[in-house]
Image 1 (cartoon, rainbow, N blue to C red):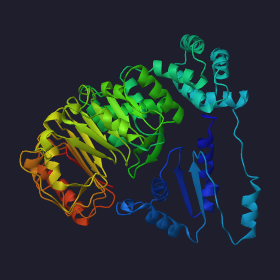
Image 2 (image 1 turned 90 degrees about the horizontal axis):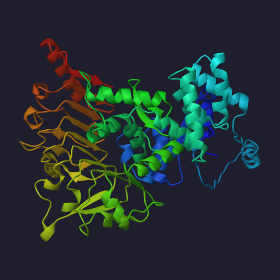
Image 3 (image 1 turned 180 degrees about the vertical axis):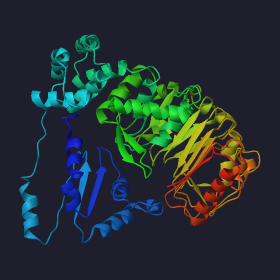
Image 4 (image 1 turned 90 degrees about the vertical axis):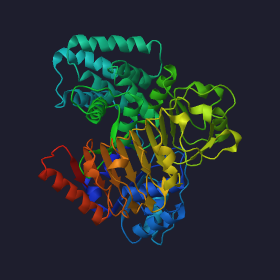
Length: 521
């Protein structure tokens, strides 16, 4: 049964102090119905803090070998979450291990919470201390009963009720629940629909957008914020930065139990989020109703109708030719404004008219093959991508010279280059490129020399570099960019790059510039 708390129960055991003390290594990976073995090995290594930028590039077999060597001779526990169908072959020289594995007496069957357990969870969520005032107890018990012992439903509805502890508000919720239940038999979807309807208008697109990522995907906070901003979901509010406003939106969704924290960074901030499968399914259904976005997968093969979708997310699929046809030159131009690609095997063929309105292109793996008339090679600029504001590239293997095409995009504000997006040791941008770029991220790249200065990125506000350990120094004379507010170095960065960043900070402080932030993790 979904939403019954299987993952939460397993995590509590996994993170219990007795388990932590008993095992040398603890590893956790989410498998799901559709999976790739390489990603499972990479996830296990990442879970044990062994996935460096160099290791990330290894093949599946090499990752498996490295995992085996790290576990050999040590006591370890591995949790594989959300496994659909599996066969396990176990070899051991110890009879007690074989007998123990063969018995299968350690199975724990999950069940819905009984009425007492449901009420305890509800009170803990709504009232923190667990005490429910008598005036609300009768209404509370009626609401809990409608959750039918599903912890996820109890937590979501409890978060909604915790925001206003008045009898009038709670009675309104009960009335709304009864109204939705009369037209929708799905218990969880009823609770989710109610919680969604009570979201402020500015939070609704932000919440639905979580489903644009693949099932069980670790959603990076920084990437999500950039996407929200590029999509126009985050509006200016006084003197607050757009990033701060987006952070407040994330905190609000977290407090409503609609999303979960998956991993914290070294600075204590949230690094990645996750959304429960049931909530993701609800978001996809709601997005389809509202024509907000279209998600493809092996069970949802797109046809001509995909051309009229405002936002398209391409998750791992099996019939890629349908997607290719959706964006080729046959038929009217596409109205798609956002394309998110999360399939390493996908090849998306598009023609020049297809992307006239595109503003957001976020690629993790896969290939984007662009067709031009008269067999013209790639042009010096993408005129048909003129509206593009945010671009993320991963595992594309471009040459650094190819970024000239990207640099010519007139409205590009955010550029993220991840995991072999570009190959080669030298990046030398041309003058006049990246005129409007505000945020630049370089993650897990082999870049050695970055031959550029302040004139190449005149509007840059934020520079983030992560695990680029070969890079000797960051942008020359970067301190002369008047708009610059933040420099971040994280993970495996060279000592010379770190020293250069510290020198810039010292110089700026001596000049009385306390606006520029330099953070090294």
